[in-house]
Length: 356
Image (cartoon, rainbow, N blue to C red):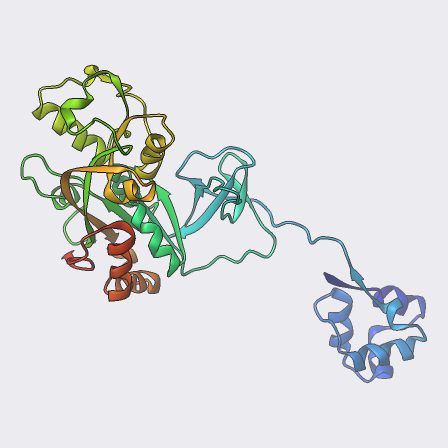
């Protein structure tokens, strides 16, 4: 609610200059100008003195504007996830760019949002919202990353490991999460990171060790990858560039099974939790996901591989206070314990710097 002033109109109606009114009221001429411009709201004593001098009531000099303040002007935004007009988005500044990540409603709740999409490359922020310089934008597919948001101000952009690394390279995120295995060496993440980023430009820190495997409903006859062949078993896959899809393809190849032999191989779920949810709702019989995703929906889990999930941070952001807070959190025993209990992760190497 804003204060409106009618001082200028009343002063002129009385035929007084600003200097004359200031002298009569015992204030400076600059004070009169500031009040009339709306830059200064006087205290009670000054307001009463002005009213007495002009022979009006205080309510005639000043009034409260009960209307809503004008909304801020739309801001240019680089949307890294699909966003339609009217859709809520979260915003985060990465370098000199404002990045937008679309959000979806949760069960019985509106999503967390900072703005509404109003056009191609533009978003309308909410009145009173202040940009937080301590906010971080993390891209990746690990459900465990959401536990970080209980301690840090984060925007999480769901994505495949490959896309997260590409966004980091393009300067669109602060941190990229990855669990990509190099087929020639069997090593995780470091080979692809060294391919994408010049030496000395990124920091790589281990988030956790996890398991990926077959996720089915309790009592399912599915026990191994070979059981997926045929039209009787409906699967839900992950998008190209996802580590889970690579795991499935590697095990199909080892078993001598073509992807064409699988029912719904081309049906995609964008993330471990959405894939496990499809199985939980009976929309699919099996998916490849983490043990944590199976746990979240009370599903049966058959391990196939143990993987390392790393966080890749560009050096230009490494000294941000928010990044320092993130690294500190990874080294806290209380946070590691939460990862172990809620997600079933191995945190023996959590916080370990692999590339400095």
